[in-house]
Each structure stands twice: as structure tokens, then as C-alpha cells.
Image (tube, rainbow, N blue to C red; front, side, top):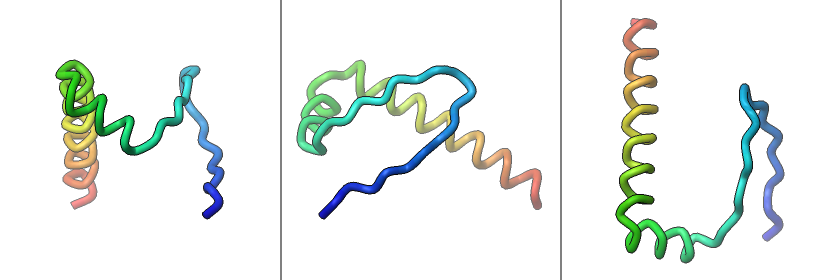
Length: 57
């Protein structure tokens, strides 16, 4: 299956890295810092989404 290409715009410069799902899972499960950082980001974005949805109501 051919990968999908998507174009996104960012406010600040970013670097994007690609890795297999297996490699990501290995990093996520063995390095607590990686897991903690992703958890913080996910919680922050979920909070933003909840605030955005509550303003629409």
C-alpha cells in the first residue's frame, strides 16, 4: 500500500521524523520520558478540545 502524502502548515518551524509502529512502541514502552512527554501533550490537547467544544455549546 502506498503511503499518503499530506501537507500541513505550522506556526513555528518543525522537524518531522518517520519510524515504524514497532520502533515507536518500543520507545514508548521502554523509555519513561517518551511516555510522559506524549501523555502531557495528549492531555493538553484534549483540554484544548474540551474548552473549544464547551465554547460552542
